[in-house]
Structures are given as structure tokens and as C-alpha cells.
Image 1 (cartoon, rainbow, N blue to C red):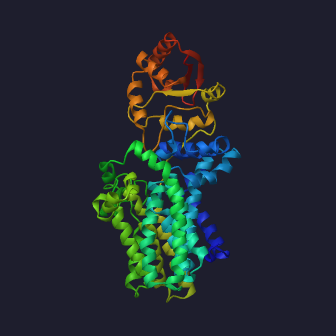
Image 2: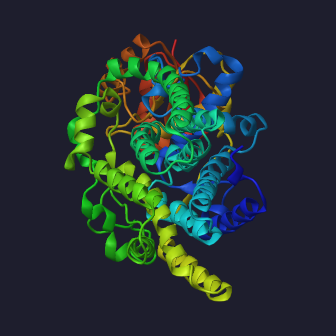
Image 3: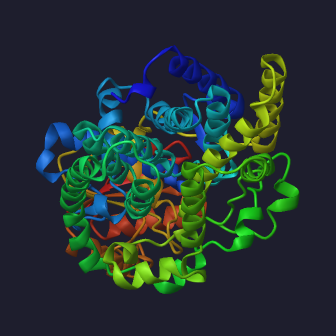
Length: 538
């Protein structure tokens, strides 16, 4: 255990962040049992968590072979497998906690844990609990969080501050356990979010070098060995985790450069808030796009500047300024230099499509610098004025970061058609309508498969295999005989046709056509949006 993570101060900070998550995410907290943002990734998150828990107790050796995109292997590696999230959520799932509640706890809990992790780092750096609280609020509630509230793996950022905290302790003491803790935190970040793991591994090396040159308590020789062993630990874990992803990349290819360019930040992206932001949404959301709403807040920026101007920066502060600049420049992706170089020379970067996600590191380093700014303002104040200053700054930040969160209800239980399907013998499932434009309803079909766990030719993920795309093109003519023939070639045994995807006349004609082609209709059953017909394909 790192010393600064112990004590009543940490518990008090945890209590504060728990209260703030309720305030700042109130609609989500109020409807935590059954509601979340309307987005297909919510379905995908729930499917990933439940597949992980299911595979752990049924076939651990096939953990990465999710039941979607049949018959493709390693389907969990088409996106982030979320290993750490899966391990944390599995006991809740085994205890039959409702799926939507598990999802929301994993999102909101990650935000609280991230705020607390930056709190302990900043308290170590500055010795100020007030500064640490401000940094935690910046890291937890800036528009970046709302921009990615549907991306579970992008909320699991608690390992970043802990990696830097362990790094500082290694340099202070030269102890092996802190060097290993640094490597373990980098590995945990990779197992939580591949994007962040790669970015953290890239940034922490130069920061460690700068700190070794300018800020260390232990001798170079004492610090080097534990850091080298920690780096080796992280490298081994990350390399083993990368192996199945490398096989998937060989099959699916790299991300297209045009896609990477589209999701590269621009300097103006840091002046763009989310459209749901109460204060800035109408003003600062017009020039942004997906992944490129990175506004960190005016107060946070102002505090960071004050910390550099009001007093001479410390050595550590200068290192964090350089880290901030590096993360900012890398987040520009193809609009900058360093990311372009890394993309050209490191294979790991060619599998990433959104360099703008480096904005979370910009936010974290800005939180550290803003904390130094608060200390510069507060150091000459008496206790009462200092508390007033802290309260005003916290209130101002919370007002800046407040945002609406439109929610929809998700099903925690299997609709009737999936309960009937679950009782059928093992067989491959196809659900219609298939999407004419990806993703259609395939993310929902994937989620609903947690109630029957049969293989599914439909699927949703960050990348789509060529076999799936080719099959979609041939199934668009369904229920034409050529489409039914394709289902037979794919080994499909069960067909689910959702009436909500068709007009009443189309659905009636479809049932007649399928019966004429020899499909046995099991019956019409509710799918929560209307009747769905379940067929057995001989």
C-alpha cells in the first residue's frame, strides 16, 4: 500500500467524491437501476461484462471467443476486452445483480476512484488536501467525462495517477515494491483500457527520466533497478495481453488513416465543451465533433496559469508542465508531429483510431498544475479565508462542469422471445432486421444474447470482421431464398424476426414466405417493442 492512500484524509475525500458524483450525475444516480445514456455502447458494455463472467465459469480457455459474429474467433479482441472491469463486475453478475445496475456502478464507481487516485497524487505533490480536492474534481467532472460517459473503459482512469504516485515513491526511496507498483499500475491501465495503457506507457517513461534528472531522493543506482524491474513487469503483462490482439490485427488490418485523422484533436478542440453542458453547451459546442470536445474548464486553466506566474515553479511542477505539453501535442494526432511519428514506427499505435483520447492525460496534468495554482493563492491566507477560497473554487468548477444527461430505460430481464429461445437446444441464432447501415440493432441483439448465450451471427464492436460485412450484404434480401440459403450455409438454426423493424404488411408477408421455405415457426413472442417471430431452420 502506498502511504498516501491510507488515513482518514483519504476516507474523507472518498466521502466528498461520493457526494459529488450523486450531485453531478444525479439523473443517472436516481435511475441507476434501469437507465443510462441512449447509446449502442451501453448494450456493448453490458454484453462484454456478462460474457466475461459467463466464460469464467463455463469455458475460461475461450474467454476471448465471445458469442457474437459467429463463427469468428477472438471476438472480444475486436474492441477493448476490459479485463479488469470484467474481474470487478463478475462477482456482482454471479450474484444476479441487475445488468443495468452493474453497468452504472462500474461507470460511476470508476469516476469516483479516478478522482480519489488523483487526490492522493496531488496531496503527495503539494501537501494540500484542498488542492487535491480541486484536482480530483477537474479529473472527474470535466466535459471529457460526459463526452465518453458511454465508453466504460474510458472512465477507468484511476491507474494513471497511481502510476505517477508509485513512480515518485520509487524515486524518493529506491524501494523495489514501489518500482513494481509503478509497473503494475501501467499494466492495470492496459488491462482496463488499451488506449490509456499505450498512452500511459509512452508518457511515463520520459516523465520518469525528467524526474530522475531533476527530482529524486534516492541515488540514480538505487532508483534504476526497481524502475527497470517495474518496467519489465509491465512489459511482460502487456506483451502477453497483446498477443491475441496482434492476431486480430493481422486478420482485420490497421485503422484507416482517414479515420485516425477524423478523431485527431485540434487546438480549438480544447475550447469545445459537450452540447449537454449547462453553461457552455450553446456557446462552445459548435466547432466540435465526436471525440473532440476537450474543454478542461476556465477555472482549471486559470489556476494552472496562476501557479506558473505567481511564484517560481518547482522542479516537479516544471516536469508536469512538460508532460502537459507532450500530452497536448500527442492528442493532435495527425495534426501534430509526435503521434504521427509513433504511428509510423510503432505497430501498437496503428490499431488506435482516436488520438484525441490523450485529452484525458492533458486533463490529469492540468489538474496537477491547477493544484499548484491553488497553493500559490492559498499559502498566504489564514484558515478561514483559505476555506472560503476553496469553497468558491469548488462551486465554480461544479457549475462549469454541470451537464444534462438524457437517459433511456434498458431491460434488466429477458423479453419473452429470448426466454423461449433460451429453452431451445443449442444452435446458431440470426436476428432480423440486419442493419443496412451499421450498427442498426445489432448492439441490442448482442446484449440480449446474455439471456440465452447461443452463438449469434449478428454482432457489435469497435471493429467489424470482413465475414460479417459480406454476410450482411447477402442477408439484406431476407426473406428471399438467397438470404435463407446463406443462413443455411452459416449453420443457423434459429431465426428471430422483430416486427418492430418492419411494417405490418412486410411482417405478415415475411412470415408467409419463411413458412413456405420450410422454416418452422415456434410462435410469436413479445420482445419489449412488439411481437417477434421465432423460427427453427431445419
